[in-house]
Length: 640
Ligand SMILES: Nc1ncnc2c1ncn2[C@@H]1O[C@H](COP(=O)(O)OP(=O)(O)OP(=O)(O)O)[C@@H](O)[C@H]1O
Figure 1 (tube, rainbow, N blue to C red):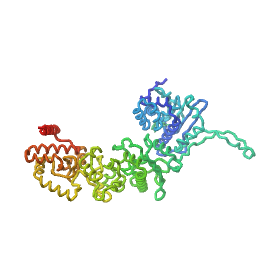
Figure 2 (figure 1 turned 90 degrees about the horizontal axis):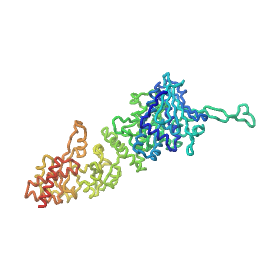
Figure 3 (figure 1 turned 90 degrees about the vertical axis):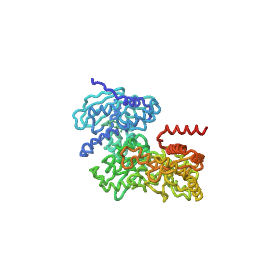
């Protein structure tokens, strides 16, 4: 007797769930097993680089009422003993793994468990939803020996040598006994099986065959007035084998699109958008594209693979054909099927293939037009999309020296001071005041903090809308765009905004003149920290703020500071700081007074004000201890 092997603990948990499942769609087990069989045939086909007799491929269903078994077999690549152990004893596969992760999040909440079964391709283990024992007999391509894997779905399984003539895998399900609630016997009915194949597996590329009883007119009676019928057993192909994307759009249900997506593109959530279209002409192709409903795992990591699957006349050529998608659409998943492509096309050839370039152009255009339509017609959906993939679009504007910015600028969205909601640049410009020359933006990491910034308060008070830049890349996007609908972008924390009326300007000039000595004194005393100290009308409530000189902005300085050391000429670059004082704030009166009576105190107050302004801008201060001591001293002074 062979030794019983234990399931890995995570497999055990998934198995328990399958066995005890009260999930109502147990029927999906068939789809999962057929999909594995089809994958196995694919693998065989590719291993032999297509030099095999494809007409022999088949997946077979064989219900046996007497023994209460349902057998699913294929002549795919098969598995040896190690593979049986590795593939069927552990959860390591995409769908199942994602499923497991969800399970862990919802620990011990069985209702939730049941809900999520439907979202995943849970694979092989789903067999245990309907079977009390599962036997897998498999013979690997090229091997002499076949092996058998048997499990009752309890804690373990056996693997032994076995007999099997042909290459491939046979899975025998010993169905559970019927209960009051559950009719397992239905999976022995050819009628049910036929319907399930039609429902879930119609597009599988290989024939799914089954022996089916049909009523036929007896040959010798066919000319009689009342012909006689007889029951004959016929081998019937149950699926149409037409790939989903080759079927008519109007005939495809959204669930079918979604299921196809989940089966093929390593996601367990429904896609947000399906784009299915065909093009005839210079180049002919069909594309089935999806915008995922969430950010794919590892999307922002270097090894994330973009690209679409490539098919030629329904035959799979390769995965992740990168050339079909520009980088800024790298989140798009899906496939392209074109009769104009050669089956033998290699990755190297793709780069130079003109047909492929034409296809890529059409795809880019189509996706962009879909996104634009979504933005104008389905705002909520678009915002959902934007929250998932907006960052990638922003990178698209900035990358390649802004080469694609014209295509993408209308898709951009930012939070703004207008109700703190997402707005497009068009919406911003449409709302601009008549005399407004620039599009104002301010950067920061948090919307509430930005909203409180002195310059934002002032701009809002004057009736200007401000764009809030929250991502590191945003300022670079603004620098790349430069302008939009002939309005220039202007960083409100940088340089002069020229917001004052003539009278206000004159008044400020006078204040500057009257206090020139004080300002020069402060500038001298802060000379290691600022390039200038000046009075300004920017401030309404607050006593001071920092603004950046032309060139590097504060936000860019922060980005550079976070970049890895030695990262090019920009690494460690700093913005010039200008300390701006509010001439209408009581602190300014105090400064004027101190300048007459106690110049050393002016220096101390200048230091404190500079530190305060730095904090408001989100910069750390050089010496927090000295800062806090000075504040205390000043508080004590003011009380004496
Ligand atoms: N009929 C089969 N022929 C050959 N190998 C198979 C067959 N069925 C399953 N396998 C192997 O067992 C592995 C596990 O199957 P399982 O259905 O659990 O996951 P999967 O199909 O890889 O992933 P997913 O269900 O997420 O698509 C497969 O990856 C495959 O290597």
